Length: 118
Image: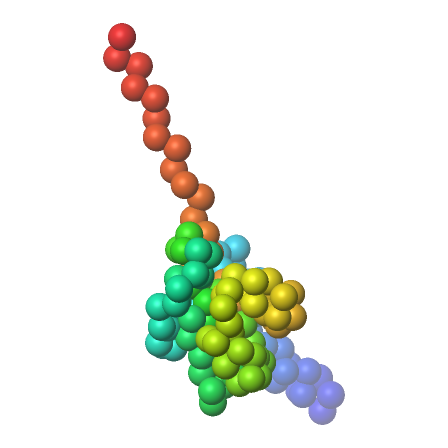
């Protein structure tokens, strides 16, 4: 009976698609944001969005990078939106305080090739 059970178990393992057992891919998961972001006056931050139901804060920086911060209380979002300096509020109250996920990380600038037409 034990051999039959073991054979059934092995057959079940072989039937599991390899995607469930595969190592995570080297490419990051693509995250699509549906949280609307509002433009703000800041030298470092372009837009801020918040999901009050999921307590997710999204920040779009002027350099194009977008990050999502998890488990952010509504009071932090309200303070952020009313802060005189968004960048300073971010530095002291958001950065390093909440788990973050890159939605659109900063892309390295392409260095233009030099033209050697002498």
